[in-house]
Structure formats: C-alpha cells, structure tokens
Length: 157
Image 1 (tube, rainbow, N blue to C red):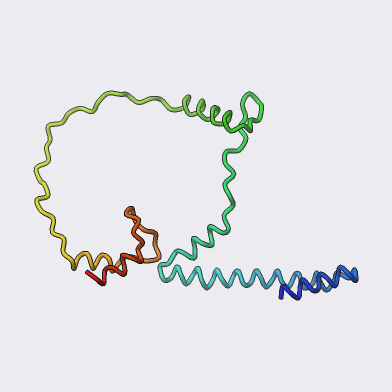
Image 2 (cartoon, rainbow, N blue to C red):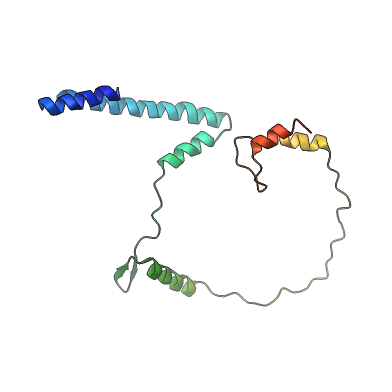
C-alpha cells in the first residue's frame, strides 16, 4: 500500500495532478489508524486479560513524549535558561520553604523485644512452590537473576 502511495506521489510530481495521490494518502492514513486501533484492541487488551501488562507499558512508552528538563525560570522578571543559574534559583526557593529539623536524639525506651526467631526452616518444596509462581516476563529482583532462569531452575530442586 505504501509502495503504491510512493508511486502515485512520483506520478503526481511529474503530471502536476495531485487528486489521486491526495485521495490515496487519506486512505493510507485511515488504514494505518485502523491497524493501530486493532493492535491496541487485540494485543494490549488480550495481554491485560492474561495479567500481562508488558504490551500495555510498551505502547505507553512509545506514545510518551520526552522529558526536556527544567523549563526556563523567572528571577527578578528575567527568564533564566542557564542550568547552573536555574539550579541556584531552585536551591534558594527550597531553602526558603523548608526548615531544618531538630538534631536532638531520640529518647531511650526501656521496652525490649521478648520474642525472637529461634530457627527458620527452609524446605525444598516451599522454595519450588515459590519459584513456580515467578512470572518470567517480569523484571528481575534485587539479586539480578532473570526470572526466566529462576523458573527453569525450579525443575532441578
């Protein structure tokens, strides 16, 4: 379809007749919008029904605009664009708003914990059961071991 659009564009450039090209251009836009809506309806909604949020967040990330940082700030009626000056203005603002807390130490209490954990029993069945519930499409935890690997290892336990 896009190849046909390109051919019509080249033809319109030569013949100076743009009506066919413009009509086909609108048709292409309509079809692209339809395809995008179908993708949203099929991939994302089906993923949400299966508790898989990955397609949803992938789509949101693709539609999100980039963060451009701190906008220009006004100081004494002038717009400031320099990063260091903007940082200084923000520092002054936050320093004037927030107050320093007291540096007194916390009072000592006489309450002691009586119960303590004597022994923790870890069984392979329990570990295997927990590893079976790991979702391999989620991000790894603080140990940086991929969930896919954990899911495969649970068979060995």
